[in-house]
Length: 579
Image 1 (cartoon, rainbow, N blue to C red):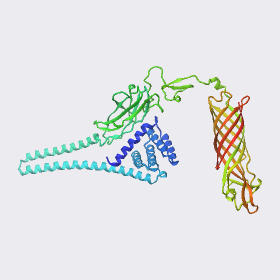
Image 2 (cartoon, rainbow, N blue to C red):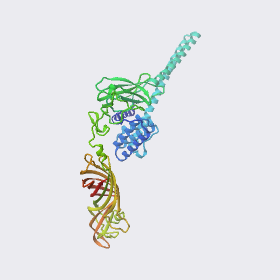
Image 3 (cartoon, rainbow, N blue to C red):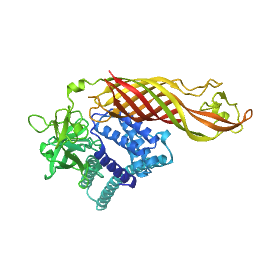
Image 4 (cartoon, helix red, strand yellow):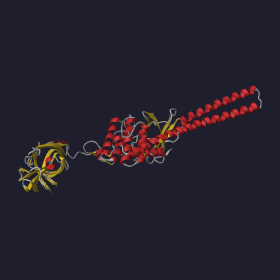
C-alpha cells in the first residue's frame, strides 16, 4: 500500500472509531437532515469554532452511514470536514484523507471556494495526487500481469518452435511432424486458456489488502435487549467478485468469544445478537468480517487488536439501536415491561425517578388540585430607571452630534452651536431614561413565566433642531424562572431570574462637561449619550406578597442597547397582581 493510501486507511479508521464513540443512534437519514448539519457546521467554522463544526460533520457522516443520503450529499460533508481539518485544525493528513473519501464518493467534487485557503488547496491537491497514484499503481499492476502472461506464452511458443526445428533436423516423418504440430498447438491453446482462467480467478478471488469497513456505529444498548449489528455492502474490486459470507465474532462481558452469521438485508448485512450477549452490564466487543466467494477476507469493521465496542447499561442515552428499516428490538424480559434508566429524566410521568437503574413513580409533591388552582395570568405596573456608564473624547464634535448618539445643551435647554473649538471629554456614570410600563405574564408549568411589557419612556434629551429625539415608548418581551419548589402554589416571597429584550431607547445624562464655543466661549454644558433602538438584557428580582393576590416586585437588571451601543443598569419597582 502506498503512503497516501496508508494515510487514508488510518484516517478512515480513526474517524470510524471516533464515530463509534460519539455518533447518536440515527434512524433512516435524509439529504435534508445532513444538509442542515453541514450548513450549521459551516456556520460554526466561520464563527471560529472548528471543533463544534467537526463534531456536527462527523454526526452527519454517521447519519449517512446508517441512513439513505445520496453520495453527492455525503461527499459534500467529507469535503467540508477536510476544510475544517486543513484550515482550522492544521491536520493536513486528516484533511487529505477526508478529501480522498469525498473524491471516492463523487469524483467531480471540489472544496467550497468560499472556505478554501492555501492549506485547504494543499490538502485537496494531496488527495488528488494520492488518487492518481492509486490509479497509476493499478494500471502498472495490470500492465505487469499482462506482460507476464505474454512473456510466458512467448517462452512456450519459442520452446515449441525450437522443438519443431529439432524434429525437422532429425528428419522425422511428415505424419509425425504433423501430429507434433497439432499437439503443440493444443498445448498452446490450453496454456492461453489457463492464463485467461487464472486472470479471471484473480479478479474473482484475490484481495490485495483487506479494507477497513464502516458499520452502523451503535455504541450503547440497554441490558436485556438484543444488540443489532449492521454493515453496509462493501465496494468490491471487480464485477465478478461476490460476497460469500459475513460473520461477526463477539465477546459479551464475562463470556467466551462467539461467532454469528450476518444475513443479507437492504443496503448491507445485519443480525441481532442473542439476549445472552446483553444480560450483564459492561463492554461488548465485536469484529465483523466480510469474505468473498473464494473465502478470502475483503475487509472488516474493527480488528482483533482494535475491536468495535458497545456499552451495555441500564438505559441508553440516545435512540434505541435498530436495524435499518426495522423497529427497535423488544426486551428479552417476559411479562410486564420494566423501564430502565440512568437519570430521573429518563422516567416518564409525574414523580418518575430512577432508582438503581429502574424507573419508579413516587406520588407528586404538588397535587393536581393545587396545580390547577394556580392563577396563571399576571398583570403588572412598574417603573424603572437606567444608570449608564458613558464616556467620550469629543462628545460635542460635529460628527458625534450629527450621528445622533450625543446631544449637547447649554443650561439644559439651548442647543450648543454646531462646531465647538473644544468638543469636551468625560468618563462618568449618568442617569438614563425612566420607563413606566404596563405588563402581562402567563405562568407556564410550575415555575416559568412568559410575557410582554409596554409603556412610555421619559427623561430623554430636549428637542434638537434636526428633530432627533429619544423614542418616547418601549416594547419588550420577558421570560422568567422563579426559584424554589412550586413557587406559585401559594402566597410567598418569590425569587426570580429573567431575560428580556425588545424595542427601546435610553439617554444617559452628564452635567458640567466643559467645552469652548465660538459664540459662548468656555462653558459647562449638559451632554446626553443615546443608546438603542433595540436592547437585550436580564436580571434578578424579588416579589413580596401583600393582601389578596398582589405583590410588590423589586428587580435589578442590566441592559445592552443596539444599534447605538449603550450599557445601562438600574432598579425596577412595581406592583403585580395574579388573576
